[in-house]
Length: 395
View 1 (cartoon, rainbow, N blue to C red):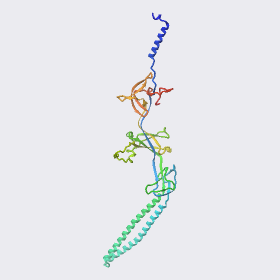
View 2: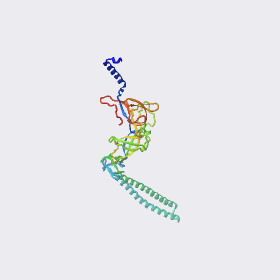
View 3: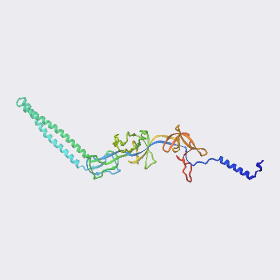
View 4: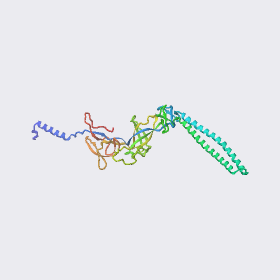
């Protein structure tokens, strides 16, 4: 054989060359530097997000119905009171004077009634006497008619005085009620959440009823959530809702929506009324929000008035579903299926079509096309030392 005549070094060189060519042909291609996330089992909640404010279920402004100086204030901020407990005293002298004046007017009218009653008796006797004399033809008819007219006049005066007495008694009752208004009491059980008027301050009730304190029942709070006009059609009474506060972002408070107001609060202050803007004026669009209301028990009064609530309204929920990060979705084909890139057995990304279901801000449910444990591509891996291709997102 001719190959047996070749030098040993040539044979070794040829063998090495064949080995290098065979290695280059058979070796696996290099793995691309990609960020991936595993396909896993989890829950997805589709929600509408909103921001709300906490308010007491019952909030009452306790005010003064009479004018005067606040002589004494019995409560302080944060104090618990019961219905009927004293809140404040207003200087009662003006109302006391008014009551005495009204009572004196009643006494005067009663004295006039006594005088008129005597005159009425005299008029009745005179008319009866004239009636008897007229029957005996002992008096003129003119005198009889004059006596009858005097009797009717006396009776009319008595009726007028009786009406005046009723009116005067009404004024007495009004003055007595106003005197009672000088002592302000709590209309319900609650906590003093604001002290508006201080002791020694003068209040004027002629224009508006001045507020002394604000009283709230904190055992039940109401959340008023602002739902944007883009989401309001999705929200309805009876839906599950939860919220967190800025101080406890990991603690959820669950409730159900009680009602959604039919119009935004801005409708009361909207002066446009559908009128067109004047020529040359610029119209600035404003966001429209509708109020969704629900109540939440408040044991321990941990929830406070005017706290900000981060509200989530549950629209749909999928439990123990196959999910992937939403960033793994590439594009959608004509059949409505999404295309994702999945790592094959050699770690190479290949495209695959999947069918999806519910989604939230982070994850999407996979109905068909992927199995738990597979890895989907969510982007290019960030360069840098110690970088790993598997980001483990969604875990």
